[in-house]
Amino acid sequence: MNRIIKDMRAPVCEIFYSIQGEGIYAGSPCIFVRFSGCNLRCEWCDTKYAWDTEKAHLMDVKDVYAEVKKFGCKRLVFTGGEPTLYDEFMFQFMKNHHFLHFLETNGTIFPEKSISFFHHVAVSPKMEHIKEDVIKKIIEKNHNIEFKFVVKNEKEIDKFMELAENLSLINFPLVFQPLFEDKDNYIKRTKKITEHILKMWANFDVRVLIQQQKIIWGEKRGV
Ligand code: SF4
Image 1 (cartoon, helix red, strand yellow):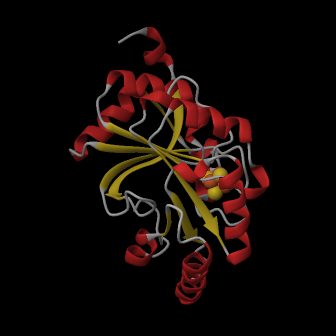
Image 2 (spheres, protein in one colour):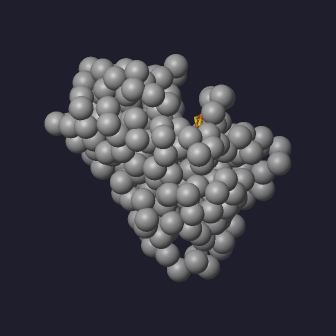
């Protein structure tokens, strides 16, 4: 193992094995490596516990591999927080270990070294923090992408669809994920969002997908 790998450590919030609860791979068994730290502060973020890098475990590539190999699963998701803060770490990991690597990102930082190694990338742009140049570069370097938009209402869907049309994201699967605030309102919100998609956007590659993990386990960490 070379010196860069040996010395490089990244703050890891948690590593766990579960099903992917979101997006087009929902239902697939995956190992999750959740990094700590995020460059954004979304009000409705459901992983605020991953913001604080002070509380994280500093791990090197070897430590992470030792943990993930125990699960015997071939799909590995780098999530956060914002994993693209750790581009070099992910690059070194993927160069040395052979999983089907997935990335979940907010699309505001271009992971120059690692981007082309991912089997699949889920980009979840936040309306107040769209980085068009970063999104364009991601699309250029990796073609296995889905765009996932967390939405509260019909107006937000229309805004994201406008963005998708302007940036040619309509060539990729577009996932609308209703914002989960509490279980009771979730079904109501999902129904409204679904009806709007059926009425307005049915001829695009769109899907309304819920967060399965929250329905199965509630708002728990590590699932
Ligand atoms: S980008 Fe994602 S992890 Fe970061 S604050 Fe927003 S929702 Fe949370």
